[in-house]
Image (cartoon, rainbow, N blue to C red; front, top):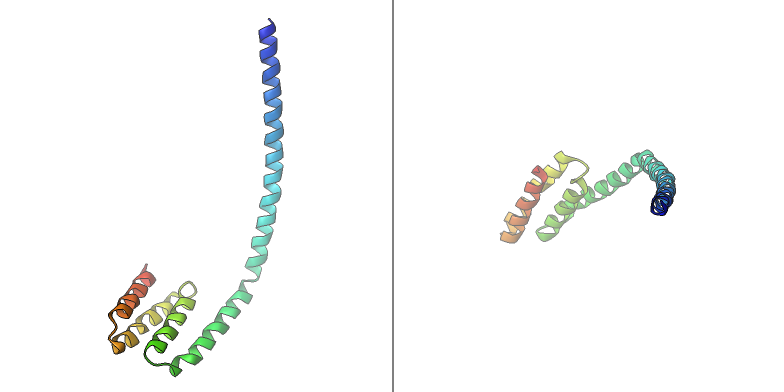
Amino acid sequence: MKTNKLYLLNFQFVLFCFLIIFFYGKGYGQSVRKDWLSRLNKEIRQSAHYDAKKLARIDSLKKQVGSGIGQDLFDQYLRLYEEYAVFNFDSAYFYAMKLKEPASVLNDTSLMQYARMKLGSTLL
């Protein structure tokens, strides 16, 4: 009889601890989730601001493109490709194709392979 009482008492204690942990964790998880969702919504509302900053960087890079030759031109096209890579697929593809031009003028096989690799990653 005592072992049954002891068993029941242990079971009640374990159940009580489990319920406290469960409800505490559930309440804590909800507040953390609300914080993350509010932060995410705030960032989404600012997406126009981020797009404007990226477009300003792209315009600045486009103005510099004509000034370089050889390796400098390759680097300028590469920077433009990287800016467009997750922003605009068509323009990223265009600049990945443009990477081949200075690489072939320089007759640098590593740059040509790098340009092909960038083109391939754009097509994924």
